Image (cartoon, rainbow, N blue to C red; front, side, top):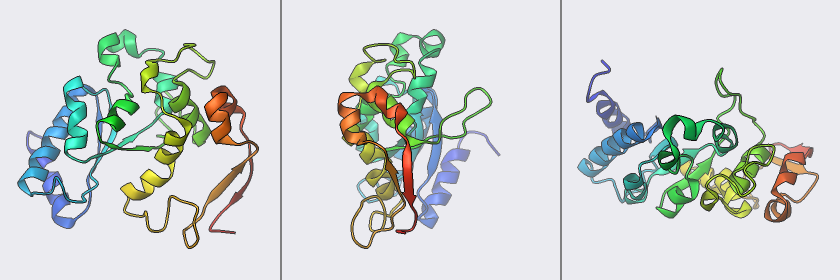
Length: 226
């Protein structure tokens, strides 16, 4: 049964088990439908202000009226920054410039109160393949440009992240979103540590020369602390 009400029924079943729902939502109508269902279930269960960490995956194209709802409902927005570098080639042609302002609006989601976490969405689809390396996501988040540096000023540049914010969205925030902040997400004694060591300081590069992020190479990795 995939008729009206089925998604709400499934979310209710997940809530019964304590399992935080992770639901994909692409397009302003799809995002609104999911927000409506989340709001209905969270309100009915008096869970809005509880530590639920329910997740909207992609949150890709959000209506201007719906950004504030992410904060109101205390939701996690799991987004894929490299989509900006790839999809900007055709986005405005397909949905128009005004609606495109709500596409990959990472800063607006964060400013609205969503807990923003980054992922690669790798391997992608038959139409587009996405890089697994996070340097491409870091680059997209801080530059909002294609891999060839277009447009020069960035695509909707007011949605850029700082390199520090982008790093947090790849590390500390995802650990929190998955209830693992006590053992993952930061470099500290006693924490689990899978670490990639690069040939340059990604923070300094991200601040001053974002395009150089694409040239960063991994020197070695530390897995499980060794």
